[in-house]
Image (cartoon, rainbow, N blue to C red; front, side):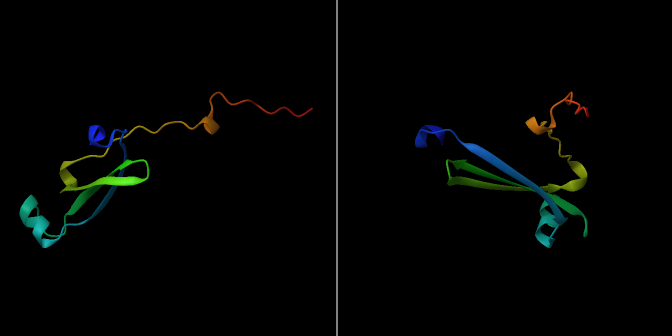
Length: 84
């Protein structure tokens, strides 16, 4: 896609969970009432959406892992304010 649009793609993912519907229970071979993780990835070039991908998976078989980045406003070590 990047070659086609001649621009870099950026991605945003949202992870949520909900009870599996009847079709998902059958397709994923899970019991009634079990949750599914739903990962929705939106691919953009600039402001233009070029792809949306939604993946559903049994929540008891997968884990979500990501690194949390420290914002510049949470610098360490902190500068201590001194009262004079």
